Amino acid sequence: MATLPPGPSTPRLAQAVSALMRPGRGFRQARARYGDAFTINSPLFGRALVISDAAEIKQLFQAGAEIADNIEPNLGRVLGSGSLFALSGDEHRRQRKLLVPPFHGRRLAAYEQIMEEETLREFASWPRNQQFATLPSMMRITLNIILRAVFGAEGAEFDRLRDLLPAFVKLGSLLAVLPVPKVDWGRWSPWGRFRLMRREYDEIVERLIAKAERDGSLDEREDILALMLQARYDDGTAMSHGDIADQLLTLLTAGHETTATTLAWAVERLRRHPDVLRDLTEETRTGGKTLREATILEVQRTRPVIDMVGRKIKADGARLGRWTLPRGQTVLVGIALIHEDPDLFPNPRAFDPYRFVGTKPDLYQWIPFGGGSRRCLGAAFATMEMNVVLRALLRDFDLIPTALPDEPWHSRGIANAPAKGGLAVVRPRTLIDDHVTRSADAPTAS
Image (cartoon, rainbow, N blue to C red; front, side):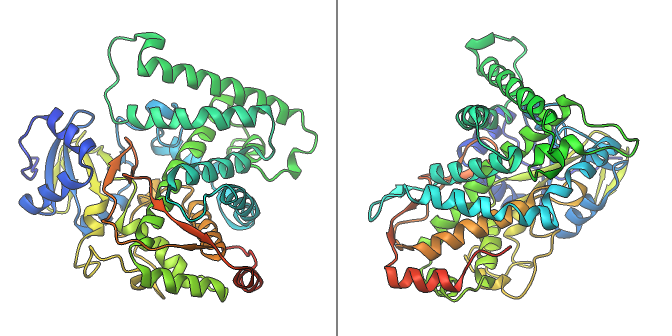
């Protein structure tokens, strides 16, 4: 017999509105009232179990696909049926195997120069000694990086995607958390506009695929599109153009907004912790990176961009810790909830990067990238990207601290961003300091 914990009794629409208007707060209030597991009523998922106990999360992430698999509905609604977010079971493993090589080892290290170049290009436009929101700037940096990593070179298609994708991501992020309407109002509706943008994206990618297939030196290219076109499944077959388009869109969108938002949160956090900022600046001047890497971990712990990850139970009567679950039950993992567990992270509300100096986080407890077989494929790419951008920021600018209150959380649909965009005031370093820092910290693979 199924057993589920109690939870908020407010109507599902009210719960959804609260989640969008006050991201994270509703889960915290439910945990304070009901404990580390509770049931919510969601317009997308129906009655869903929310867990934040470390042992239960680990059990869920380690469960085989026959017990717990892809959540439904999922981001395949906006990214396409061939996206990793849409796939389950054997097909998910099959596609993931082809996509692993670009994000590891030598291939990953090859992207660092692109990251450095795009960061410096954007930083050149930053205003000096006046307040500005960093999120739009971080969005441009991460978008240009992923476009170059995916397609390799610039051109007319590149320029159009650079204009198209921000609007696509912004609208798609909102639509992903809303039910699909039963009536299609065409271009006059948000879903209609989204489908038009998707159609244009598909046409652009098809032209880029055709150009790549005519390229006689495809095997010499480092970009992800070239690697996908050369990849083969175990039976020797190639990926379809449709699947390539869906997977590239997944990389372009998932590898763009979340990383940029985390970088904006990093600026917001560091300005309010001048001691950490001072130590980071000094470390960067001497060529170190230990505290910077720990800071990235702590920003993701205290300001996770994504609220939750989930699974759908595939076996009737499945046991998950204290709970017996029916087939079809949705289980959501509260990312911020486990990140704020004082038994795992003492004084969890404090921003304390030093807690990660000299230690690696448990990937079943620190989970901004999700976990298990569905953990974010681009986690290493995103981490390296954040490291490169923060290194350049700390090397080339003085980031001016502030006594202003913390920026509130703002829901952008999928991602939770600083409400004011990660406000910053920067001052260029002196020529002497700049020369010393550049000599000590020449770019190396992070």
